[in-house]
Amino acid sequence: MFLVTTADQRFWNTDEDILFLGEWCKIYDQKDVWSKLNSKVLPYHWDDRNILYDDYLYLDSIYERYLDCLAKNLNELHNTNYSLNYWRIVVGPWLYYFIEILYDRYLSLKTAYESGLVTNTWICKKDTNNWIPDDFEMFQNWFCFDKYNFYLYSRIVETLNLISYEKLDVKIEPDNNIICSSSENKIKKLAKRINVIYNDFFSEGFNKIVFVDSYLSNLDIIKLQILLRQIPCLYESGNIYMNSSTLNSKLRRKIKFNSCKSEFELLLNKLIPENMLKAFIESYKSFHEMSLEVYPKDPEIIFTANAYLRTSFCFWAGYSKEKGAKVVGTQHGGHYGNGLWSASEDHQIKICDRYYSWGWEVKGEKKVIPLPTGKFNIFKCNVKPNRYGTILWIGMTVPRYSYFMYSASVGPHMLNYIEDQFKFYNFLSDQVHDIIYLRLYPYDFGWNEKNRWVDKYSNIKIMGGNMSFVESLNKSRLAICTYNATTYLETFVANFPTIVFWDPYYWELRPSAQKYFDQLREVGIFHETPESAAKMVNEIYKDPLSWWNKPEVQEAKDEFCYQFARTSDDWMKQWKNEFKKVLKEINMESK
Image (cartoon, helix red, strand yellow):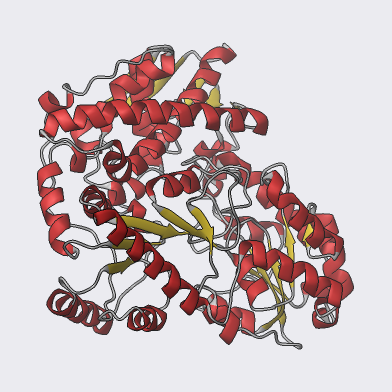
């Protein structure tokens, strides 16, 4: 059978029987083409979640070994002497993403090879310079989409030579899909320019604590800085725009790895040097210098929630940490602290001197410190249920390709999630159908969810994309949350009637969190099947507040929030005291 590895039909040989490498090859809106083919789809190698978890642990060990070796290589290449911590901050995000992405693609191709069904496949010609991202932001806008992944599949096929292949003379180029973007009008752009000028003029040399992408409102950041007796400054991590450097293969060949324990490591040894960001090789000096220009000099504390994936921030934060600054962070979403595993959470804790959770702790990890968050203020203050409103059903989407390791639906498992949502809708009463609105995730990743829904249920009510989440909640009486992330934490903090459901097979919980979800289940908030969730909605939809305000429901919800979405009326004072404590420690260390 001819192996298809991409949704790009130019690389399908329809004259033969087709073996699809995975569901990502079959775009729903192209079903008129692929449904008529004599084809099979290979099973996904991570359908067994125990194997997925074991592979996560395996890849974490590989990441640590390769990071250590890569740090030595890059110090030698750039004539520097930075610590492993520096390179973990600068290179770490790309490295663990790339290793985990490559392993998924590698296992898919091994599954195809071991099936014994593959006769041949088509790949693209090697055009390495065209496929090396300048920075992590560019990499992030490639790795979820077809073209870059077809390039990776092609390189794996060509490097391992396990499957017969033919290179087609068909040019493919990256397209910069923006995963999540927000449009800015002229006033917002002008305000940003003025803010940059203000920061450069007033803050340099004055502020000991620099807040970057803090996930707090601008007003709260200003208030907190005044409490800390700082000049209020608002910093956002930003891209550094420069001309793309020409690939220097000679430099890249100097990067060598001494590990060769498996076929996959042979692949890593070849493809890591070949595919590393240009910011780490050809543009390293320029990125370093420009990053130090756009952020404050000599900070004592760098605080962030999610700037750790921005290349310019990583260069500055890594260099500042080498000079003695403390990097402190906080979580920026749900799943942290209750999901069984997360490469992102692991990385953030490792790079931080202190990591402030929303209530949870990690046994044996003293740097994880629970603090109430100010992120939820907008929900706590501005969201109220409408007793006569609609029901808001909140969906999610993950990319068609696995992109990092965490206990959630990944890649093709999205189809199982969609099927569960179909079941949930089927079990709802006609009366609920009349008032429930589905709010789809803002980015579709090629699943064509809206079309899937309309084709299956012509009467489904899908909310338009112009209304904010807060606005849509204020028009609703009940929220239905369907995945383990931030959404249900926001509704809980707002004391908004909420039903939560997901399949625990795809959303594994850590043992320390299980009892809190059990308590939610006992009072009817949390459900593990769409049937159970729908039954609860059918029972309470007329007056969700009466159920929600029961003492036992409130108690379970409040205890859960204290562990995973902690808030406090004096949260700002607690944060002020914590930052002063860190500054005091820095002063003690410098003496």
